[in-house]
Length: 268
Image 1 (spheres, one colour):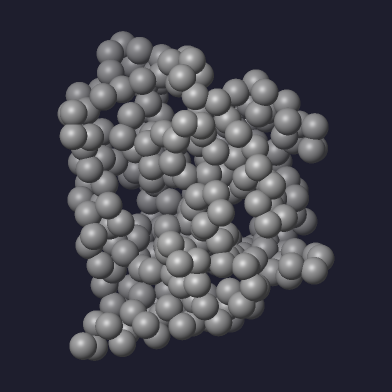
Image 2 (cartoon, one colour; image 1 turned 90 degrees about the vertical axis):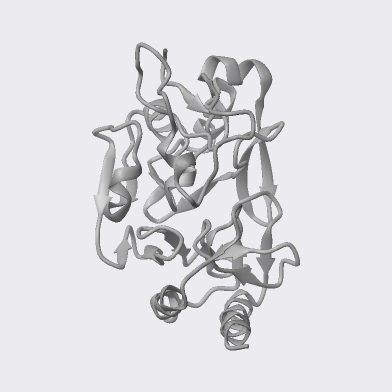
């Protein structure tokens, strides 16, 4: 089977003679196996049923699948000092989307927050000439399709350029990563936290969960460590994992208030 894709989490696996018997990502307690059992699809099948939409979202180019698929995250195209960076990836790659990004200068590197968003990362890398994919080494076991393009980084920070830093937040996964971009322009610096700290529906706070679909809270020690790791970074905006799920303006204060709200809640 050509690189099967899990229909519940959207992870693409290595090419095999037959679909895998199970998906380790979904069987982990942070995720779940679909209610109809383990099901698989392919890139070709997805392309028949879905398209990639490209939206401008508060100054950031956002890519998402329509209709939604699996976890339904978005990817974001960031023109940074490190090059044109694709933050997160999707399960589907289309020629139309690749052409649209090439018209904006192409993609020079990919960085992903955590295993739930690895998706078809190898296909995205290949579409732009095997560009490097930056993943934290603490999450090495979750890669289902290995590639020479993967660049494992370690520690709590990796500066990709003067204006882009990857921050290991931990908590959700050991290697859960946020991206801090000290961008030019009126909007100022921004934080892209993936699921390490998730922007909630009121778009004024973030939350901290070990499992979002199964409602398992994050350990207080992990939340404290996360707060310490991002404490030195200033930012105005926080871009969440899906289209429009953003805190625009006052992002640093909103995240600080969210940390305090969490600790107040667990203190009773």
